[in-house]
Image (cartoon, rainbow, N blue to C red; front, side, top):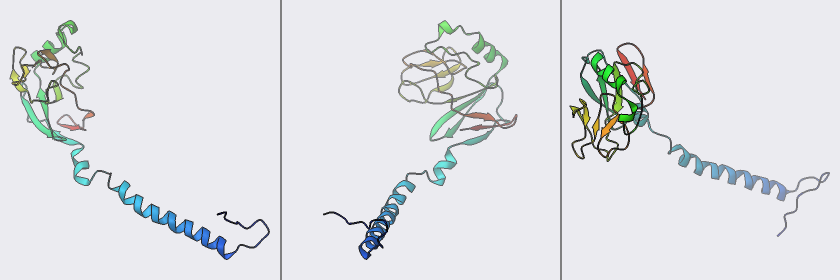
Length: 176
């Protein structure tokens, strides 16, 4: 069925008006159905609140490791001693399974912040354990050094560094 559209110079008919009105109502109807579907895909306020966290690091003693929760995962914050920093910086890259310099993993040498999830099967490693005084995964034996780099075991990658990390002050850090 062909739709007759008024040619230029002929006045519009009632049929032309109904055709345009029907199209407009249909567009509004489609928009009213699609809008809630798109809107529900946005994260809610509680999810956005978890997107980042601020941590007061002023009470973490040198040599201590604190575990916080961020986005449902543990995050290790380690206040490294000068000895630990030197060990991490002096480690030859050839000794590492996943070579990465210590400087590429930290913003401030005294603070190491890594996700506390083993890169092998997702276990939570224990701090101040193993021959490198870093972390040891109790499930499968992966060993990480004081820079969170995998040194031995089945883990293929270093402990992940969450991004972004921003030092707001000397005593406060924002993760995420």
